[in-house]
Image (tube, rainbow, N blue to C red; front, side, top):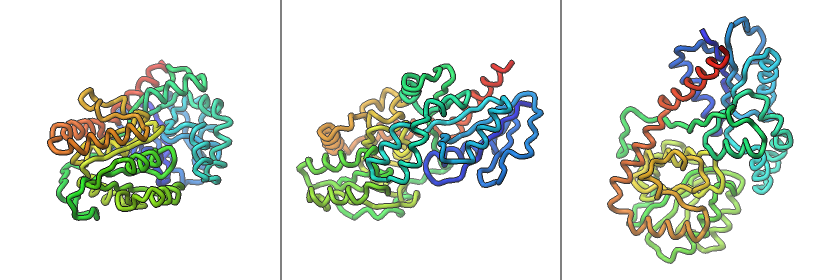
Length: 359
């Protein structure tokens, strides 16, 4: 049987969540492979492994960074044994540290900087890469010279409850009782998520029948609060801070419009969650990788993340927020199609194609 050594990460950010989900799917649906799970919290993680398998590969489902030593022990160990390595790349090695410095998150930026400097070397350590969008694949090929035949594209997935009861979710949120149109967004409060542009767009809309809730935390929270104060729109924009996921689902179920104005996002799983739970239109930046997977009937959900265009799209959505039942159904159908069980099939197909190449 073909053996896959699968690294199981710990952590709370979205890439770690994806990595852990891949591990849980492998545990639940392993056939036709033999999985060996390598837990990150184990000491000497590779010690004692039986590598006398005829055919094997190592899958690192999170992005390798120089500062994270457990990754490097595994990478170097399997590389020294000649076992093919597959690694997921969730972000941009160059942009992420730059964004961290711009966000004045100096510690995070300094942790990522060595990987940015060594990114061309790091991306060629694994034999195969998995990315979440075609534009990320193109960027890696053109910027870092990686052979495009060695890069696979798989969208991120979403957990779809067996019995999705939207009415029950509405009790979770604290949306004010009013006749206002509710706009909602959730994500990390960094410059790259486009919230400065969104807030300036909100300030330019000369109407008082709406309110924007932004859920999330991050290094730009204080600056966003100051911008809201300076623009005198505290009655129109509410920063919720950290919000438990059940509460996020509650806000989504009450939102008339959801918007994700990222300036660069390799996928943007938050917009996928919105399409599953929201009762209204979900607007997505053209700079999010998820746009590549949208069906033709959702192409009008895409916008360029510039202030004037954001304001225009929000105005149009507010004018048309009634009678969007067909659009909402299409959004939910799309989100359902990217459930994790379906995505796991893509991963298994990639594993099999790699083993087939081994002969």
